[in-house]
Amino acid sequence: MRWEITRSTSDTAGQFFEAINVLAPGFSGPPLHTHPFAEESYEVIAGTLDVCVDGAWQQLAPGQSVKVPPGIPHTLRNPYATEVRLVNVHKPALEFEPFFRKLQALVVDGRMGLPPKNFQSLVLVSMLFVAHSKEIRSANPPHSIMRIVAFFGKLLGYRL
Image (tube, rainbow, N blue to C red):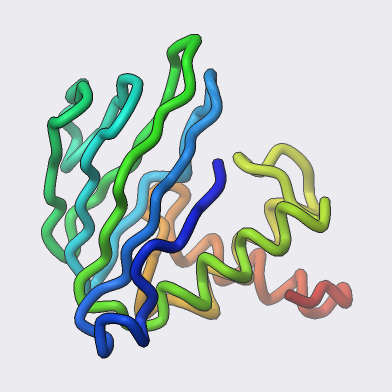
């Protein structure tokens, strides 16, 4: 998964943050999560996207979209053989831009894989979620577990 920022926080005076997300074929998605204080939306540009909102999976084709209200558990995935491109918006912008920039840097630097499949990746994603708990909280695994993993990660010397 990668992001191409199309409207930054400063471009919108903090009203929203917008990016094109590109999901590789077979991408299993982020953990089930919520955004406590922001709405998130997905609009598919190319490919087919599976989105889970509040426990219900739906399939989105190009031109289709979904909005996720604040506090509702959700995730997405691309189990198909073709790449998915979508417009992703978070309203208000809060600190989503620094969150995604740090996430992208960790992945590009090879320090973290998505989804996390090793201990280091699990620790780093937990630390990132905990550092940005106003923007994003894991629902599964529970946020409390990520806080514990992040705490021990810091004790072990991991840094974002």
